[in-house]
Image 1 (cartoon, rainbow, N blue to C red):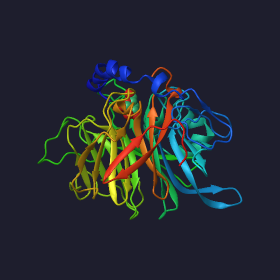
Image 2 (cartoon, helix red, strand yellow):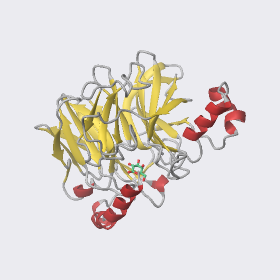
Image 3 (cartoon, helix red, strand yellow):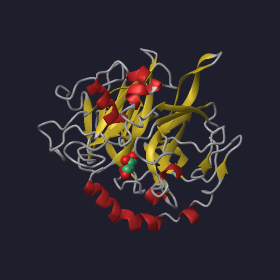
Length: 393
Ligand code: GAL
């Protein structure tokens, strides 16, 4: 996020605080959900089966094969997100798994961040992953996974062709040009044989950019990729969805068969064939994409940092076709600022039952940010999300 976006955040703050009377509208937010759970309690403290606060912010939920001792690979719900126990730099990606979506086992930090450059030379965990690399390449790994690096919104796909797991994340940090934590603006990619990791960084990349015949909202920094998500379509093709052009334009780009990079590299990629730019200059981020009853729905937030803002939903019959603006999908009291959340994921709990998962960030104690899962329904090609203080799917 650049300085202008942060400024916008400050400008929106009073409005945002005014609408978020958490004590009133979200009266249950102080509940502690622990023990054996049989319902969702949006905004409450949510503990895993070991009694620890679930740390998987900016996350993603989906079903995928998980190796379980003595059982081989078993389909489970997998939750991956940012472990913010140590603040908001160098956050490892943490994984949880579940059979019922209410009760989660911690699978550990599957993409670890690196505490010091020396650890790449002497910590056995990192030596096993990166020991073969040259000094320059290790320096690069440290730049991407080090203490000061931004590792946000990790997302994971199971690649059936290779029987492996591919993790993408918003990779950011200062650059030689600017002493600003969100200057790099890239997507990081890591791979593992297991959803429990260890994930090994492949690299990080700038992605597609604005075609020469279109108006580029940020021509001075091409191919930026910040808040992001992964989307696996029902034909097996995977896509990365991300905010670009200084957070002004959302892109959807198709991935290669290994899910490790773009299908067609940026210099050759063709707009509306290999990627699409959506609503240039609309200033959206936090993309959550799903295909529901054959139509694609994309929820995004505005760009006010950790503060909640007005969400928007766009929909289309085809990923690289025409998209329409459906407006705010949230309905009822508290819906103006998405029930005080920022979108991160839309997922299918079971056939035909969809869940919106948003983050309720706590900028003063970021690890205490809460998860808000709510029912998402489609009627007449419109997606809507309603508030429930406690519910089951
Ligand atoms: C938000 C973004 C988060 C994080 C935050 C930092 O806009 O969605 O993932 O980057 O800004 O201020």
